[in-house]
Image (cartoon, rainbow, N blue to C red; front, top):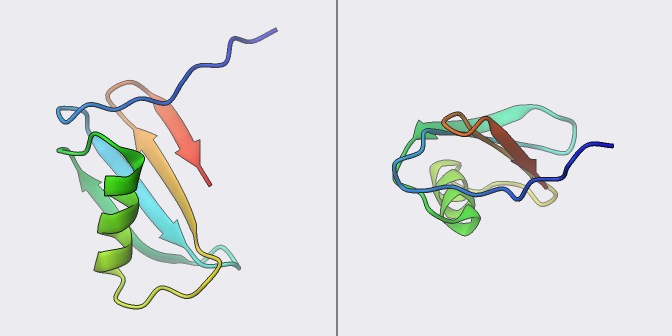
Amino acid sequence: MTKKTTFRMKESDTIKAMLYNRSGKLLTSIYDSGFSRIEQVRSALKSKCCHPPKGTKISILNQTKDQYWSE
């Protein structure tokens, strides 16, 4: 049995985040640090992609801690 870990990030962690449409096409991505909450990453992705369509999916990779999160 594997242990489930909680996704966490600090401002010093390197984050790679991607925004996809419903069919899985990449709309935009971010490779940066300075985020401490998932909502900050979500907001940055959506502001970078001017008018994202409904039903987009977000995936976040914390490269510093080697953790993954998606919605």
